[in-house]
Image (tube, rainbow, N blue to C red; front, side, top):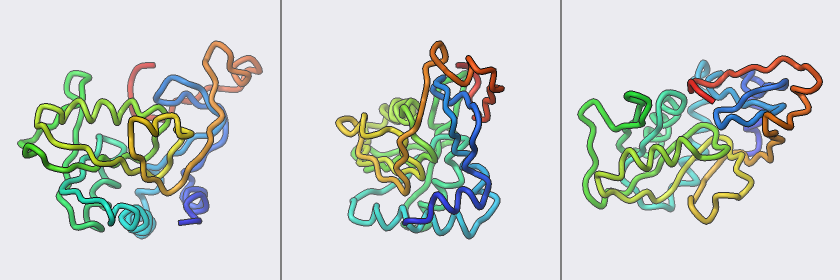
Length: 189
């Protein structure tokens, strides 16, 4: 799917400025995929595109981390005709709640909107580990990992983006006084 970046721009989901990412790193680019969720037809198109990538994988269930990926996870599950669950934070820790459970050996694809360090993906894996299921892949709209996690995760994405990120101590945007914005949903860092 070649027009993902265009769809993000159209929905005001590709922002330029000075941002504190969920990882704590700073960047001049932020993907606000929540902006896409205002437009069901765009989400449907993106989920269809990711579903096409996932069609050769054998899996039973999609699990998405709340809050950012719940809508996209649901739409990907609709496009692939798979069961849909989500994990959410309870006392700061991701957990499978609301009576959800997985069977031993159940094959899971984790769906996220944007992946940079995959911290939330690993928290999601930890949250479902007790069920002894098998994570067979990770799907996302934007993959910012630059292949750094290819040995740990099988990532399917609609857009691979090489981010410019900075450690806050060495951030030239901070040094030049550009206002820092933290648009993500996670508290902390």
